[in-house]
Amino acid sequence: MRIFEVCGASVADLVEEHGHRVQRVRGKGGKVVLVPLPPAVSRAIDRAVGDRDGGPILRNTLGGRMDRHAATRRLKHLAASAGIRMPRMHPHMLRHTFVTTMLDAGVSLRDVQIAARHADPRTTMRYDRARKNPDRHANYILAAFMASGT
Image 1 (cartoon, rainbow, N blue to C red):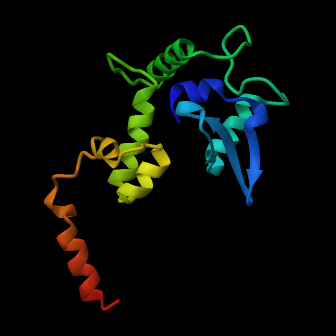
Image 2: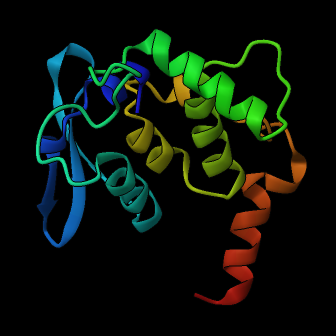
């Protein structure tokens, strides 16, 4: 999710859809999408929400809706507490890590593009650090597929 989507998320936007817990998100251009929440993420959201049944999921120190500046400060604090020292820590780094980790794990470019909600696959490809790695060349994947006899 993008930082403005995370900060705009409300408790009421947590819903069940086809047996999955999802977050209703208003993305770029006001487009509403449902983002599936893996169990660990769902548990973290539950801890952030506590027993509240409304309002923002992420709150600032005064209890109001967190904005992107407060989110950046919180991220820097959490990184420092974890011993992570980076000169320019910002929330988009988490989105970048999400995309690059999926690509490194072998998730297809198309599936990563859909998960990241990139309109153009070239945007997703910019995140692929290993795209020039010969070990991942499509020729090897095709040869393995053909050799398997399937």
